Length: 339
Ligand code: TK8
Image (cartoon, rainbow, N blue to C red; front, top):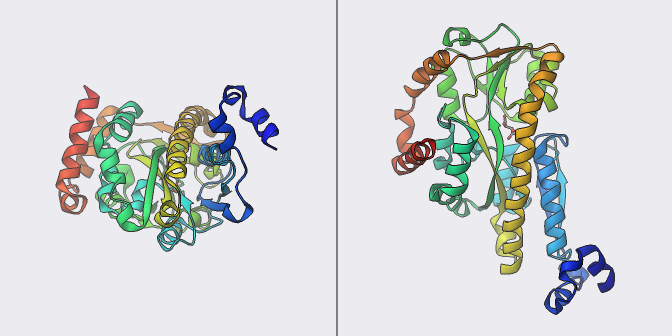
C-alpha cells in the first residue's frame, strides 16, 4: 500500500523518508468525517471548491480526515447549518457573510451597499488586510472556526414585474433578502418591500409569487435557473458577498496541529480555485441569461450613485452593532486599496 500511495502522490515525495512514514494509513477507528453542506447546487463553483477541499484534505491527511459534501440544502439552510456547527452535529458549511452576521455582528460590515468598487479591492481587504483575519477571529467564540474567505460575489437584482434602472423602479417590489437586518433596511430605504427568507425556500417563493424579486450573483441566478421564474435582471452590483468556509470548533479542537494546518491550507487553496471559477462564471453567464429570454439592464454610474445615497442613509443605525472600529478599519482598507 505504501508503494501505491507513493505512486499516486507524485514523484517529488519519492526519497523523503519522513513523508513516506506519514503515508501509513490511519487505523480504521481514527478516521473522522467532515460533513460539509451548502445551499447552492452541485453545478455552482462553490461545490467544486468543496470537492477540491476534499481532495486536498484526504490526500494530505492520508485519509485520517474524510470529507463528505452535500449541496442544495440537503443538510439544512444556512442558519440551521451554522447552529449545527455550534452544536457539533455538523462539521462544515460555507455561508455568505450576511447570515453569519446573525452570530458575529461584525460581519455585517460587508453588507454595506456599494462598499467594494471591484473584486481586486475585495481581495485586498479580505485576504491581505489584517481586518479580514480579525473578523474570522471572532468566530470561535460562537463555536465556529473561519478557515478562509471564499467568494459568492457582487449581487445583482432580478424581478418579474418590470425593468429596474433607477431608485424609483424599486417601488413596491417584493424582494426576498437574506436573513440580515442591514439588507432589509437598505431595500426598504430604496422603496422596495423586502422579506427575509432562507435561500432554500426562494425558488418556490418566486414560482408561487410570494416574492417577485431577489438578488444574488450571476452564477447563482444562472445555475439555479432563476431565469425560469424571473424576467428582468439589473446589474446593480449593490453588495459584494464573501463566503466564509466554516468548521465547527468542536472538530477543530479534536484535530491535531498538523491536521489543523492541512485544513487551513486546503481551505485557502480551494478558495483560490473557487474564486477563479466564480469570476469566470459571473462573466460568462450574462449572455446565456439573455439568450434564455431575460431582459438585462445596465445601471449607469449616476443611477448607482443615487442608489448609494439612499442606502448610505441607513448606515448610521448599524455602526454600533457592527462596531465602529471594524467599520473604520474596513472603510480605510477600501480607500487604501482603491488608490
Ligand atoms: C446559499 C446562500 C446564497 C446566498 C443567499 O446557501 O442566501 O442568497 O447568496 O448563496 O448562501
